[in-house]
Amino acid sequence: MASETTADRAALRERILQRVRDEHVRFINLQFTDVVGLVKSVTIPAHQFGDAIDHGKWFDGSSIEGFARVAESDMYLDPDLTTFALIPWERGADTTGKVICDVFTPEGEPFPGDPRHVLRRAVREAERLGFRFNTGPELEFFLLRLNTDGTVSLTPHDEGGYFDLSTDLASQVRKEMVNALEALGITVETSHHEVATGQHEIDFQYDDALRTADNAVTFRYALKAVARRFGLHATFMPKPFYGMNGSGMHTHMSLADLATGKNLFADASDEYGLSPLAKHFTAGVLHHARGMSAILSPLVNSYKRLVPGYEAPVYISWARVNRSALIRIPKISAGKPQSARIELRCPDPSCNPYLAFAVMLRAGLEGVRDQMQVPPPVEENLYEFDAQMLARHHVQTLPENLREALDELERDELVRETLGPHVFERFVEAKRQEWEEYRTRISSWEIDRYLEIF
Image (cartoon, rainbow, N blue to C red; front, side, top):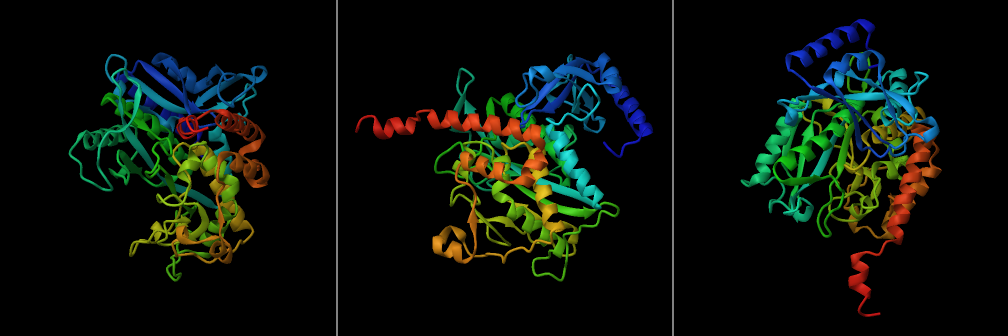
């Protein structure tokens, strides 16, 4: 970490290497993510770990999605030792550890295509202003059955509903998922069945944005690994089923005083419990909601979730109890002002959390800097509003599809600046290609609808 001293790193290095020896660790996965948020890994024998800590580990990034062209492919991984953990499902003869890495160029500069660096850069801006950015995502997912040949079946594993206490395999799978996450150093707060059949949610501890993003990335691959051990598949696809709720990644966020840790979003005298700073921050997020959409909801499929109904937000507004609003203000527990926060409901769990948290933070900081005024809250059910009512309340909507979201991203200077030229260009290139492939494919719906009657 940026605040880590040489002595701190040396002491942590020795503690981790001693643990590697004591636990008879055989391999270490050096992990990072590509531009779209997929985990990549270089595996080294444990006896090479000390050298990797001291000098980094070189790799060829030219084949990584959105990373580097062939001419600029050499780069190295620098392990962030605070992220080291043993992988609980890889214990035994080949006990394996993992550590998340930052990516650097041969000149020793942070690689501009590293999503973790994008978030670090945004966090440093907040720190210069005296703020710590805290986040807490709620990642929803489906558990699906596997076919006899090991392929994924589009069949939910269970028949449960919201908060059901099921006695089938899903209940045990969630417990094993929690065990695995805790073994990886992620503090779990709750786990439960979600609204849709086969849908679940596990929430982990609110923390600073970089640690939370690291945890979110680890969360996704850990749950997939545990599900496979039970003969199931965990999917974070936003909308796998027509007519059912999709999976979101509602993200709670707040700013704290960097020196004292005091929650700067709290104001007990306000009707919503929010300080003026919190409202300026909220105004900034709302202002850039359309421009951020391609980052927060990055798949063609994401926009099948973002439709009226199904508890998915479409309307750019804020409120306390209105779950059709884009930003909800959770109720603050009595005597707990530290819990004051806002909840952005449009992100989904397919997003790259590093990029998502970076654009959220920069949008909010612009609201603070420019003293943006938050519009009046809308507590009515927005799904029941017609176009005239939406116009009367000055309520805009999110983009309707990925193409429209990419157009908005390209027009939003703040979001482009936050990503940096490298990530922006590679991300848009990958997503334009995804949209074009989707646009030209013939779907089964079209065959069923048209083939016989035309």
